[in-house]
Image (cartoon, rainbow, N blue to C red; front, side, top):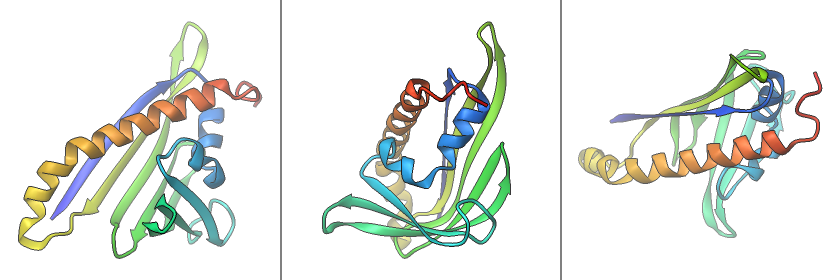
Length: 156
């Protein structure tokens, strides 16, 4: 069974600053819960680049290997999750929006993943979806605060 989670947040920063934060693998630990991402091969953001996100605390966690499959800088990038625990597609998108403060951005994150559990996958997803949305929402609020607090956010 496949499931999709889609969340977004308005960020009080220029789209370029939001993009810089979204594509910086090492900064993801500052806003993604219990996650540290490392570059495995390739340039930081190009089709074919491979990264591994380690989610958890100490030995209690799992690796989430990903390959970048599409880049449309400075608007979107897509990864393919290829691990045993997480399989599917993830996308980060930055959309410009006009405000009285000038050009700002909306940051969207969506994942379409395979839910494990065989015949129990639907029940597992019904139980896990609210927690997943809560965690993603919390991460996006942390993301927005981090970008908005960045002293270089308005530098283009």
